[in-house]
Length: 546
Image (tube, rainbow, N blue to C red):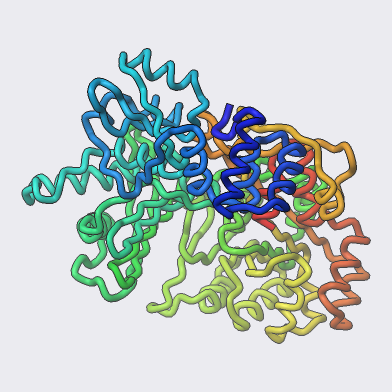
């Protein structure tokens, strides 16, 4: 059962309350009822999902209907003695947090007050009667992460030595929990009164803990010490790196960036797992057809291979996986990257250093005198770099690089706009791949449903086809997120004679795209649709990514 699983009479009463408060109108109620029947979810859950009502509004109405108190945890001081009566794993599993205790009764914050099994489990475990308190899901998650992470002493109770050791311990805990959560980035962002700690998990930022604003400078200073940055400099952005080993002995690289803001420095740490640099191409999510075509493309001894997509779409991972395949004895591979994310044995990797004159174009020019077979350029940012890459491809080298374009065909207009002759483009470009990273639904708690009429019309699904959607409440396996892990979706264009002719004639991207589809190019939309039908992802996730 979920928070919204109430009997039909209760649903009707909820609707009446919502109408009385003018939160929702009759037309919206009918729309929610239709959608809830299609998705087999309850009224409130559907209304929130559709954006007709927000969760806080709904909980306040639910509080009125069921006679349960609602508490905004952002402004609530949790009694630590009450909190200590439940361990973190139980709190995370049941999504419940002890808030305070009165006369032997323990007040516990729940997102799902209808979860009677959870209430019984807590009462049995603690040996006390439970008073249910309504709280939002995100606030409960934040409390579980922050309150159980480390005991933060009150500022007035700390001396300098205690504060220093507490900050060191806190930073260590933030890093360890980020690694445990398989986060790609840690964001430490100050506001006027608070310090928000967020993890990017599966491409989505999630608030993990809220700390007092007074912790901003000590935490940033600790990270700067670890990264060999200037502690005294708070007015200019800084970049650094450090290594961190887990208790199990596994080493991680951290790339650190600081940025001055109105309320203090924002710090972002990118987590780099060296083992992910050895990933295989067949683990990335390529379809069988696209994987075979990609293998054929990179088997060329000359030409340009382009990987495109927005920031965070996994372009570097695809390039590293490709280099792993190409890295064989007798092959000289050189790279210029910004920065080097993963060290690869047998490959000479260089890093951009603009202060020293080590730009992409300067490095590429020098590479050509290093007798390379394969060159990887982290990004084609300017005309000089692209022209040198074209020259390298024409003189017997295979060049791999990235472009920031949304799809395969728009890469051609980008190259043309930068002044590259159409003949040179058609002579050198061997393949262009556009990609995105899409979250995978948790297989432990996903829900199956039939596609609705709108989805059939909008996305080309057939009547009767089944898809899966994420469970909003999640489960223990996905830490309550409904998703676990990501995979790539790919659009691979192999230039045909027809396409090259169109490029020489400078036709529009749309015309090239139409021809590419006629030539059997599988689009990002089709790849995403395939993943929805086989239960890998959801339609909502496809809409978010594409």
